[in-house]
Amino acid sequence: MKEKLKIYKSKATSFWNERSKKQKGLLIGTVAAFILLVSIASIFATSSNMVPLYRDLSLQEVGQVKEELDARGIAYELDSGGTTVHVPEAQAESLIVDLAAAGIPDSGNIDYGFFSDNVSWGMTDNEFEVIKVDAMQSELASLMTGIAGIDGADVMINVPEEEVFVSDSNQTASASIVLNVKPGHDIQNDQVETLYNLASKSVPNLSNDDIVIMDQNFNYFDINNSENANSSDAYTYQQGVKEDIERDIQQRLQKMLGTMVGQDKVVASVTADIDFTQENRTEDLVEPVDEETMEGLPVSVERIEEAYEGGTPVGGTAGTGDEDVPGYEAEDGEGGGDYEMSKETVNNEFNRIQRNIQESPFKVRDLGIQVAVDSTKGENEQGEVEMLSQQEQNTVEESIQSMVDSMITTSIDGSYDQEIDTADKASIVFQEFEGSPQITPPSEGIPVWVYLAGGILLLLIFFLVWRLLKRRNEEEEEMVFEEVIEEKPKAVPDIEEKENDSTVKRKQLERMAKEKPEDFAKLLRSWIAED
Image (tube, rainbow, N blue to C red):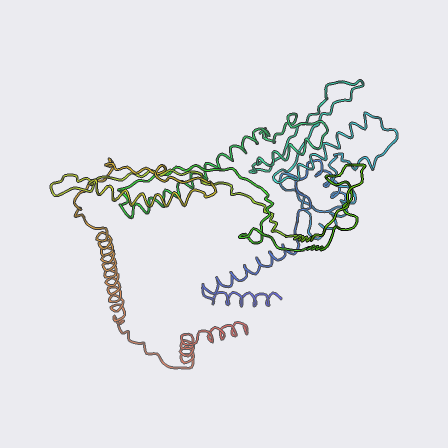
């Protein structure tokens, strides 16, 4: 047995010694990678994936869940400061159902369901009031927790006791609320109003003035500040709209005038009067079908025609005539006559229009444009500043006035029934600009492209020099290598030996070791095994 172990050891040693360093490193790396892979696979196979069972629990609720899991012998992990419970994924769904059936976790808060589950004839009025207020607080806290950004709420309500005797003074309730706001969340103004409305509408005789709301960082939320913030937001919005309109008109006007006169020769300013009155109205209109004749569409026509020829009709007219005396017999009428009557009744239908109109949130009610033009033309040959003549100023003013008039008439809303006098809304002045750049002869400096070209050329020269030096070094190394190769070793005369069987075998072994080292190694191993 020991001999076999020695043989295996010698074979392994010889095999290892025959390997090169690269082969040895490859073998060691393969074995290490295999061991690491097996270890990772075993860890994943034995470990179970943990998923959250409950999140954001109170410490009391976490204690209840932990006690139940310990009793059942189920592995769990706590996270997020002890407020999140993780359990194995395979048992998560069944645990949720089982714990819910057992009433775990129980926050300890009383809600309105307590009354249906614990109805007792022996409950006193004081006990009932205490439980009622507690349930009201729990329900209100639950409502506020449902708002985005609020993780929880603690509510304290103070309800006044009912007086035995009738009093003129009205007893009011009060409420104090502490919110647990998520980190980084900002409570908006509309959310503050919602919180106040939830509290005031949920508790009898509770007004907004008797409510105090704050967060866990002692930041108070006041509904009055919220209303002021809304007013401030409206003002900011209106100012933003006004500035946007003025900036847009000013930029368009400056661009057109700059193209015509020169960007550094003209400056435009715009002031706008914006009407932010938003009107919603309903109009019920009745219009004719034919607007020229102002007639409608006939839907029904009734014509009545009567004709009579001969004497007075028998019986006459009922009642007493105009010239008859009541109580006396009237005279019979004599003579004949003709009678005709034609009557036509037409029912027309007209267009009935109902319009629900919502006006634009803002309109441009008035507009004022001020334009300042540089009155200088430049310098003459003597270096003197030349000014625009009166005729040139009039020509420029007419051109600018036409552009300004068009801008004003198209910008003011047409719903205002007023004649637009553009002369009163535009002002054009000619003045020498103090900040006008002085006209100087162009400098004969070196252009930027010359610097760029010089930099590129310099980089190219550095690159060529580097390549040249590198090639020279490579050529020198090749020359040294060739000289080393060309050096021939000095011939050493062979020692003549007598050829016998041992000499022939030794030469054959030497030749095999040089030409076929693998076969020579196998031969040695076979000899060692035979010994």
